[in-house]
Length: 421
Image (cartoon, rainbow, N blue to C red; front, side):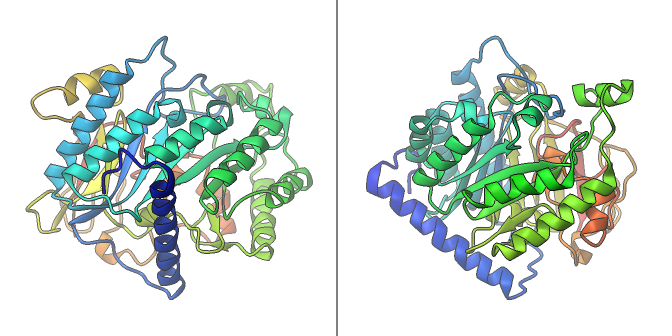
């Protein structure tokens, strides 16, 4: 399949095939399948688009507010890095692609199509592969969403975050609750059964009852996948500063835990099944890309600050490398254009069996061989809204510390980790 051109009936056929594959994988999960990850020839692929229109008050992701974007240059470098990492990893089949950011819905559909075309040429991108795009309501009108569908996207993840306009202003979001619901309705029309929405909890001064009311409203108009993310106050963000100065109250972790527990119960009654700490699905609509992270599977990360974890070609799965690409977009593009064809920053690692050190910080990671509980979702930690201090306790506890994990797809530091399986 060539992902560049997927108009009309062919695009609809690919979306139908992807949905059937998703249901098959969900059935495997329901039977209790606990694969330690796909073979070294298969992987998921994360693509980081680092640009945004505005920095939200809670966000410390690797993102930039540029005066102008050289999209042709960015597109070329993403294509180059995708080809390079697929060659270095020896991956022959890409089972899911996730365009995150930043705000990837600000990219042109032609950029998405070019990356998918490069992936399909360098490896194999089956017709039933899940291809997700994160979208913000203000950057994703219906015509643009349709163009992304024609480019090869078959699943949307919409950052609603809240259905309360006051909360949206607090978060620094550029959309209103009405905008969010309109975008959701249009997305469901274009991608039926393939739309996920994010809802945040644990905001300053937020109460359980009103938040459950938002969730109830969302259940009346959402599709089959919902993510509940707890706010995590991060240094360097506007919200962190306001709480530090006392101009906003600190979020109450006990109230956040109550929201989470009661939200889980409400979702369960609506037919949703929880398949990891923050994500809920019904009708087989779990994110296969996210599930790869939880099953300790391979994933490649391309773009500024993207995180990946894979066995290099020829390593026979005995050694896995975890790398974070160079953070700053201009520097990353210079490196991607260079002789190596990718931009990666390397750190120190402890190569002893069953232990790794991320960026020399000294935080042990569990060996994939002994990983009975799936590793925390990289996607969730990339958003850093899912905080083990309260959600982990509410969900039965996490055996990992809240800081120093492999972390987000778009990380804050460059490192290579080698873990001997």
